[in-house]
Image 1 (tube, rainbow, N blue to C red):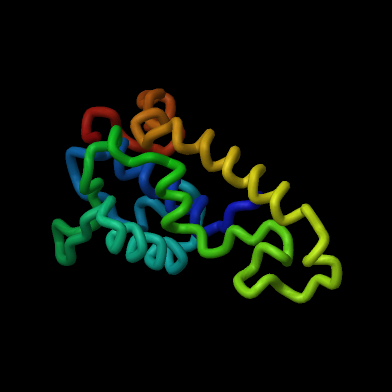
Image 2 (cartoon, helix red, strand yellow; image 1 turned 30 degrees about the horizontal axis):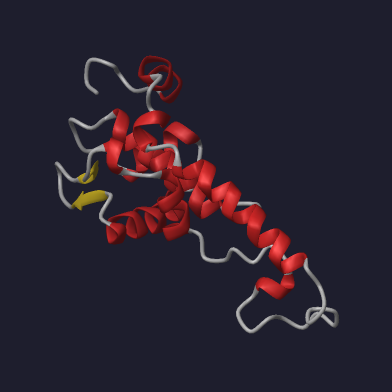
Length: 148
């Protein structure tokens, strides 16, 4: 399974927001900290706001802020909500794809089982687990620990 950049960036944005839970961060700050595209992160922020895990505000004191306790954000649930396609093989696509051996092949079931195992591991972790090493993460992202 390979996650899209969108999901990867969503996780990174949430880590950043959780590390600065006491104040709002701009999308530009997140982009600069990770060296990512601001435009792409704007789309990610919109999706995370739609999911209710970040709050956004416009204006001088605006930005993004974590909207729920990090302990309540399950990584598996987040990945399921953000990823658009879990078709690991063609026959897992909606409608079954076009594979000639699909009616007799067991790949679909094998990869389905593997996907469920993958997501089950992610379900064991929360955003709080991802930010448990707070000080080194803040240092690596250039976040002033006193302001965070």
